[in-house]
Every structure is written in structure tokens, then in C-alpha cells.
Length: 313
Image (cartoon, rainbow, N blue to C red; front, top):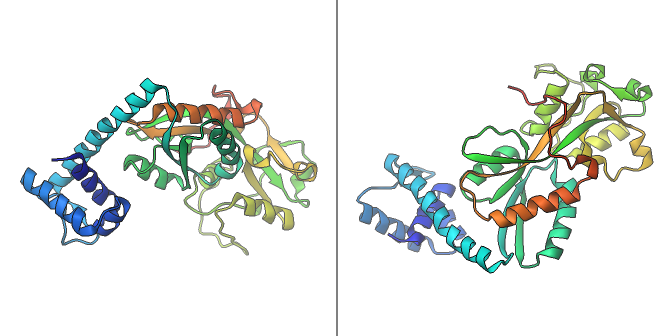
């Protein structure tokens, strides 16, 4: 039994395909198949049901693969111990981040990080929460930057800051005359939302105490982009709710359309999320520091302020 063989069975389980797993591990499919078969012969059990498409682990295969993930994580700690002893900051850091945070946070973080730590290779993917959680559990990501809580016992959540939501109004909105607003002021018919699957969509529906209905609106625009929501408000009627970081580069004209909520403000917790047995601790701590330095000073407190609970039960 070798670590390479363990890496191969983990890859096959992750991608549920010998071909894709071989490609990701930079070997030929026959080589991977042969090594997995040798491991099965050594253990005396079948790890995968090859008659199914996609390939699925057998019952005993699931248990062995889970143990293989643990062994591989522990083996990778050896390199981490050596790096820490040498006091070097180098290596690869794979980050997943949700799209409603990424464009307003990562450009500043990347510029500072790469300037200070040129020997670190950052790999960043914009994914929705479910995909990031899946990839953290399968070792495809080192950490995620998410709106929390996730409430998954296999993951660790380290809160970074609390980001308020603000209302962004069209010129014709009756709320434009108000200095501050409350959730009950919002007409649900005027609300522009992100697509299904975005945690921010669910949070906004919860802020407005609106449940999903079967009602048909004259116009239903499906988008994954916060920027599109801004433009729809600017060029049409209605209102949308935006995360506070997204207004940091607003013009004065745009800021005139922003309204903050009365206390308690609806806000979301932004955290670094890792697997409970995560690696690359030094790099992740450095990333946390750079994120804190990149956000406005008023948002830098990790202490949870009095906020409206926007996470549905």
C-alpha cells in the first residue's frame, strides 16, 4: 500500500470517474486503474463498483476512502512542519469564495498578498456555498470565504467580520424620501433578487419576511450578478438589497440612492471556513490578516453586534 495509491482512490471517489481522476492526477487512465486494482488485491476487497456510471464506492470502499483521506491529510502535515521550522511562506493555497463577496474583497486582498508573499501560489474559485462545502470536504479546497453559519460538524468556521445589508433604490421609489428604512417598508413586488441557490437571496427573503410563492410577476429576471441588480434598479423601477462592501466604490450620485436600515441592522457573518482537519494553517492565518486589512475600518470588529437574524431555521 502506498500514498500514491491512496491519492488515486480518493481522486476516483471525488470525481466518480477513472478518466477524470487520472487527468487530475496527471497520469494515464490505465496507470490509475492498475494501481487501484493492486490496492484492491492487497486489501482483499473491491473499493469501487465499476458497473455503475458514474463509478461509485462499495460499502467497504467508502470506509477505506474516508480513512485514506485522513492518512493523506496527516502525511501532508510533514511538509507543513518542515515549512514552519524553516519559517518560510510558500506553497499553494486553494480558496473558494461566494460571488457576492468576491469582486468587492478579493482584488484588494490579492494585490496585497502577492506583493508580500511572492512564493505563494493562490488559486481562487468563485462558487456558491454548496459547491465550496463539497470541495472542502473532498480536499479540493484549503479554505472557503462564506456567509455563515453553515452548521456542518465536519467544518470549522472562523468569523472575520459582519457586513450590513443596505437598500438601493430607484429614483421613483417612495422610500427615497426616507433617511433610514425598516424591512416592513419594502414592497415585495418591487424587490430584485439573485437566482435560486444563492445564500444571499434566502437572507434577503428572510429580512423581508417573504416566503416563496407561486405568484407570477410581469417580469422575472434571473441573474447571478449583484452588479446586474444594481443596474436594474438604476434603469428601471424597484429596490434591491446589497452587501455593504459592494457600495465601497459608489459615486455620490449612487450613494444618494442608498438607505441604511434602522437598528437592528440586517447583517451577515463572513467567515473563513476550513475542514476540521485542515492544513496550511500559516497561509490561512496570513490570508485572514490580509482580508481584515482590506475591509473598511468600521467593519473590522469580529464582535457580533446587535443585528437582525437573517438566517432561516
